[in-house]
Image 1 (cartoon, rainbow, N blue to C red):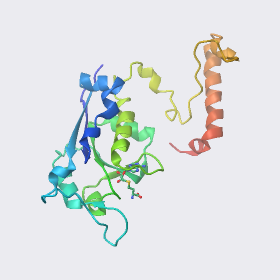
Image 2: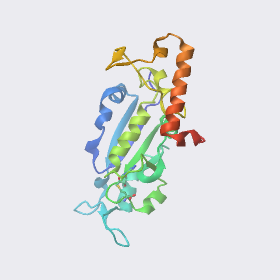
Image 3: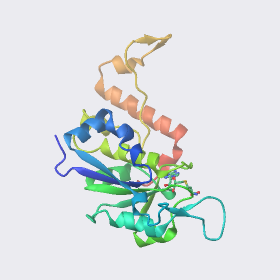
Image 4: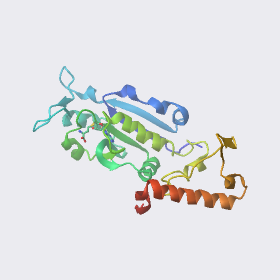
Length: 231
Ligand code: SAH
């Protein structure tokens, strides 16, 4: 099964060689070869105007580091055809990425992703181009590229036809609002530990109940915040 409209990702970056990175391998790589999704990059530096091809400047008000210039970045963004794809900016200040947002993005025709570098990007280009800031977690990366690859990894694997066994998406951690139950496989005994008997009982209702109970217990212990969350 192939997606009706292939999902298209356009990445604006100073490091286009970082793409497709790991997404050229395994299931995502095969799906790309099949044409279920595509990725292209725009080198932000190509839009610089001086002979040093400058893309950054010192922060107004002083302080450490450099800031991506709004005029150069806006031109790079405007070079991408406006086909109503969401325009994201990878940013630690953004809304934390969730599996819900991943599913929403996968239902669309693609994404345009701006990768920040240095101290970040000038606020005016975020406002003027209505960039949606997205964070992949409460830690600071050196650039938006690994964050963009992470977001795309999550999105591509839920595109129709990408995962071999499409059912294996629905019980996973976060899809049900719970962390997933533990998994076991052969051998029956490993270093003195045996597979929980219920899993080899053949009683499917009992197995489902055990898995659900385990998922609830694990979530209560490790991520009580998930149980309190409305979505
Ligand atoms: N000075 C900024 C951090 C800049 S890190 C601050 O304190 O908020 C440089 C770039 O890396 C950012 O512009 C962003 O594109 C990317 N980045 C860093 N951490 C990220 C995260 N947790 N999620 C998404 N992008 C991140």
